[in-house]
Image (cartoon, rainbow, N blue to C red; front, top):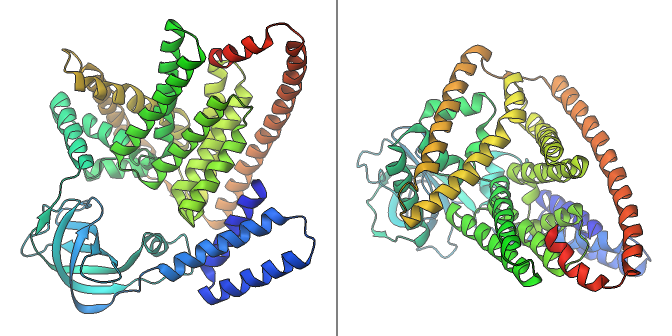
Length: 499
């Protein structure tokens, strides 16, 4: 599985820089060489061919670019519009009348008719303006590369936008509107309630520009984007809750399966409410892999689930490894696996080791990607980021579920989370005035910092491998003893639930 995944990623990377014809020739040559020669690395070659074919198909099927100084289009709004700056609306619209169904990224600034001021996802509008074509850039990590992978064919400076000709309200839109209204009613339109909506459910444009700038300056802007980390928190919290409830009633195999299914259903519902984006879907795939391993009662390894999830991500979304969110998510998941192994059975040690390991791996990515350094940001990510996310994604989400029941006092958890968020933000504003803005690292400083962090992660990984080797040997010895004991089959059926 691992060689195939590596070959798939390499094939997709190569396909980004080659044309469709070059990819076909390369695949043909590799296939011929593999059939003639007796290479042992068959999985690597097959994975490379699959990755190259997927990348070539994405290149060939991408809609052609759009350009023109005066272009008129009837589009369907595909995503929730962004309003980060007053007087500006940014949205993605899919062409309705065209055969290619091209996607346009529209940017409307001070439109005289104000037709796009109340634009929502699912609206059908008529837009007109100047379009700049968007072609596949050489740098896959650039902003244009990210837009191109989303299917965008051009960027339009909207000069005219009609009022919505058709407005369709989806169930997701209705659910998110109810959530926003419920939190606003419980917290009184406070800044802490808006932070809860942004950190737990990915609501956009609910925070003021000073608050967004604050999170960027202190290095906590990743908390405002819902990713696989939040989905993992919800799934883990639900799994622990349902397994604990199952132990109180009846510790049977059927109860255990019911608890695992209920936790997976909770994570799926959470992904539905935040919009089923790539970051949340990849975490849901990881949760599915974990549930399958738990239900089948087979020995499973964290690294194996991580590789399988990464493989599924790249099969479903080619070039997923170019997404910074994907890299950060799997870096955090690898840190969780290393920390949980080093922490052993102690919950406190596991929590500390997981926090440090995840911080180290994600810091490597952020320093190489952003090139900024802030002592306060590093300390806040190490100390504050994880507990703050846990608070909003467990207590806050659970409190929002209680609001559905309408029980008196059900809004107390949401109000408590809002109050804590408000106090933390006030403290961060004070810290910003003391510590100042983050410093831009030079190329040598960036490389040196990344090397030091990578060396530290290597030491932790070696200790993890040794710990896993020791656990494997001890489990083999215990397994040999248990198989000789009478009633071993009955103990196996219930030991998994107790763990």
